[in-house]
Length: 196
Image (cartoon, rainbow, N blue to C red; front, side, top):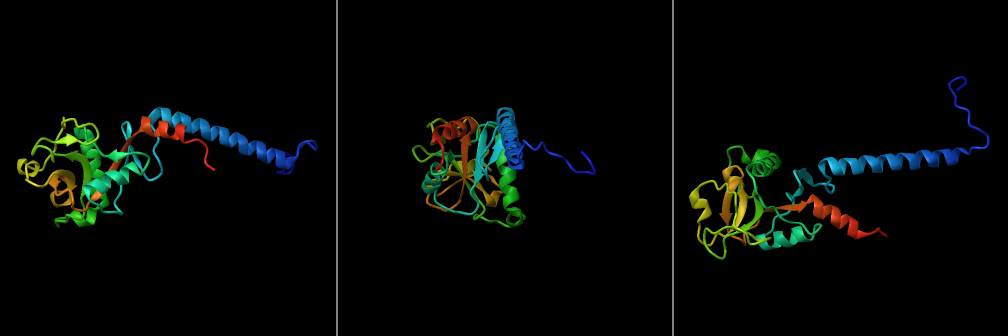
């Protein structure tokens, strides 16, 4: 370096150097991404990572429960969220509350509700996940009556109850929360092949 300027070997083209720097940067980015994926997972743009899953809070659309299932399936073959632990439940509730912070401050707002992937439409109060037809091993209903309302067979995080669990009419409109396990997302990416 002389007078603050770099001198290049006359045999080395500036364009070639720029290309090599770019390729080197891309290799470094790919290594960082692989390390990141292995360390804590990776989710599609707009999705949130928690534990081993990615979540999409579709707060810009409102659909009935069956349409919510189809919506999630059309997004990377995801499914409506299945809640298996208290920690996962708290993660989902906290983010849902943040999305509708102004709506939930003392005002009842059924419009700020989110569909989850359980139903008791076959046997009243026998809640099962639609993805595997297994009974729920964790529940968080606002009260017992909310899990036993006749003709209300689909599970929501209900804005009226500060995002506590409730059953609702499956034909009502709410926002979906989609979930895809990171392992399934990575498999989807591997099988998608090149674009174009």
